[in-house]
Length: 296
Image 1 (cartoon, rainbow, N blue to C red):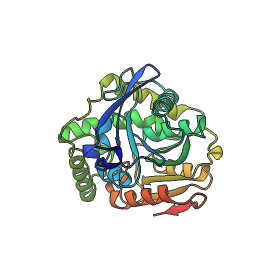
Image 2: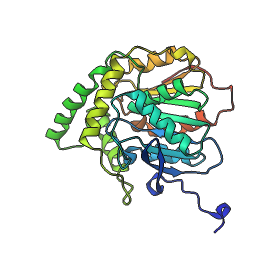
Image 3: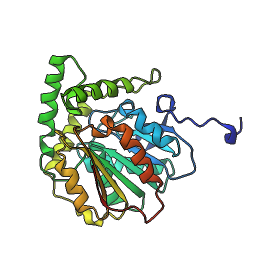
Image 4: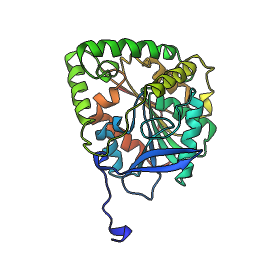
């Protein structure tokens, strides 16, 4: 079959898993959507592997964009050990992207992935065309150093309730939050074959160290970020306080902030029916027409 006649995979549940070697690491990644345009690189959260991206969001983007999701060093099936700093994670992300031959990408970073995205655009501004920061905050942001304590507390609560910790960490415990958590966790199980390797405990602990260092670090000068930037979060984020999304918005010139009501850290997942089209619209806007402002 000619390349022009090949079927384009646009469902994340069916995306092929691939590998590429860079910086002494074999990175595992998934790729889907039509190629030829600017790729959209998805950077995932604490303790997450390729299997933790919401397919409703990825599929919406992949309908018209080349999407790449990656396990960074030591995560899932990628080799090596998880670094103890966000900065090293960003260096690995740069090595991965350039190993694939891409010179310009859009970046979607959620939570820890949003930290990594900030360093990536700081160190390699010419690599990033557009930036999406969801459920995340700036280096030195108030409350970020408490993420390990919140995480372990909710792991215990989830264990007692016999549910996935993300049901507590990402969603409220009101009826709507519980419903959204159940639906989200069911969506994560849509891929039934070729699933990723689980996150190793040692890697999870290293990520917590990196997050703590990020939270205690010296704030970056985000006024230098010139890329169109979309910032999104729920209005009751317990992991990375929602106020930090507003802080990012005020510090990144021309950025746009979307705050979803009655939702927490996983607000973009709970409100995927609103976030996914907003994300696609943001990525598809003509150059120099991305206004700043806040939406609720």
